[in-house]
Image 1 (cartoon, rainbow, N blue to C red):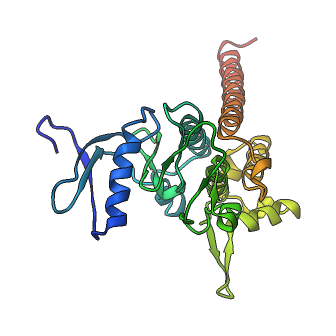
Image 2: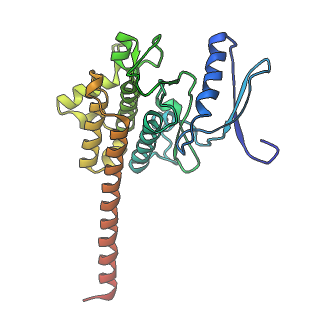
Length: 282
């Protein structure tokens, strides 16, 4: 707690090394350039002490991963919330790629790096490995970094990170929201399978319904679920050039949300009209 009563979160290095310190400093530099409602706010830092510290706004509802994979029946993550979170993360990434003062690649998008505030709004976090890039650059050639299961196969093979590599990682998060499954599946035979690959096979063989989370099936409209499934499949295309941009993804998700909102409003209107007629009589 700060002197003014604000609750904050403090990030502290567990292991001191040059690379970890570099990531800390990189996060400060990156976050100083960002002002977006769906990106966690850096309030301050101390890099001169023995153990460097970063001070952030406190985000009370933990990570998206905790809510997807450790679902709490008292506070379930509904279909509407999933769609809202996906849209907010897409907008944040679209901002980083297209609207920030200097374009930024996040480079580690995953459900554990998406925090949820008191109203379950998404906040993208952890910019330690993020990179600035100039508008005329098409890619960054770097040592491969990222999280297995979310890592763009094209980047893994070429060491060339593009904005479409973030799109691939976001596609995996979309699939997590649809299926409730982890990005790496453990099978009975102890094999570890990629959720992204399993998802593509399920869609190709028309077995997607077997993979979907029960709450998604119960609460979502079939048309909306299918549209998001097709969007996720486009995001994880092995050919980065065939993936949509994050701006296109954000616009598509916003359109689906709006259509869902309009449909709900119509249904509520019909229900009110029916109840009033029942009350008044013919």
